[in-house]
Length: 94
Image (cartoon, rainbow, N blue to C red):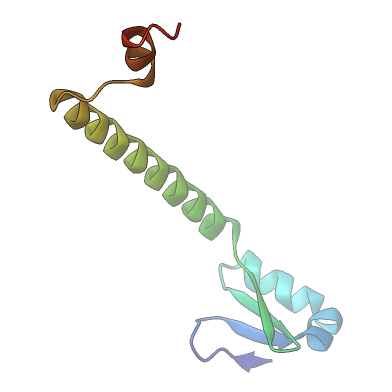
């Protein structure tokens, strides 16, 4: 088992990972990240707490994007911008 260079955690070759599954599982169980390397490609095994944090971060980013879109729409409408529905009504397309 090697110590990872850039990422804190343990790095295993794919062959090592197959033979040392219990070690990988224990590492993840105790909050350590695990990297499995096969043919110059790395796969991370992360503890559930880290995965949950990433999911929460994605939710927060989506909420922030939504808020930014609402603000942009509001500013657009204040400057005289119209919605598609308003344009269709104005052009008598509905």
